[in-house]
Length: 69
Length: 187
Image (cartoon, rainbow over all chains, first blue to last red):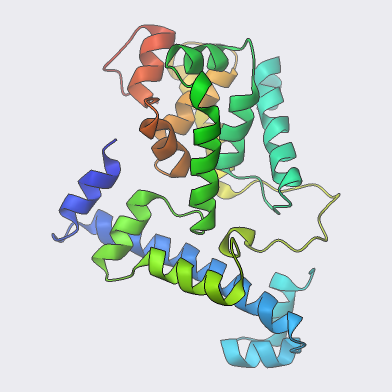
């Protein structure tokens, strides 16, 4: 299937599909990376406040998203 | 919608939840649905998968799905699009795993608190269920069977469709073995 090859071939042009897919993929990757880093910080004893400050969001936002762990 | 699901289709949905639970994953996603489809025996989807030669390749499919999950669930089309931006996903995964352990990206947002509670479906998985209904309607089928779930899965861009296609199971080939059509794009 061809979707991957097709996209690879067209990566050079200005097809919005490629750009939008890249943004969407980047967003998903970002979410995963954030989860890894937050988990790691918590394991090293960081407070929610400290994590929130580094991420540039409110303590409540981080806690709501990851607090159940 | 679920009242229209056949026994086999319900078993797939329940199986998908069980796969998510067993893996300790917080949400039920489309790859979990594919894993559950692979477990079925004697159903329409099982017939299609067997007819397309997937029976002996089950382990390989499971491995491919696990590999994609290790990349943070990104499909090849995703990583290609990111490569176009100069983002090397393999490099990122390798560095993160070096620092935080193998398979760490696959862990997602799992916490452990949900171990026994109800697991929500991802938006993609919900869309897949809705699409299986449209797929059934497009074939004038009154009930939603596991074959409609399989067909919907092959029609949606993403990891399951890519992995299936790598093993010869595409929207067209499923249509052909189940409905005797080749060209139809109806989803």
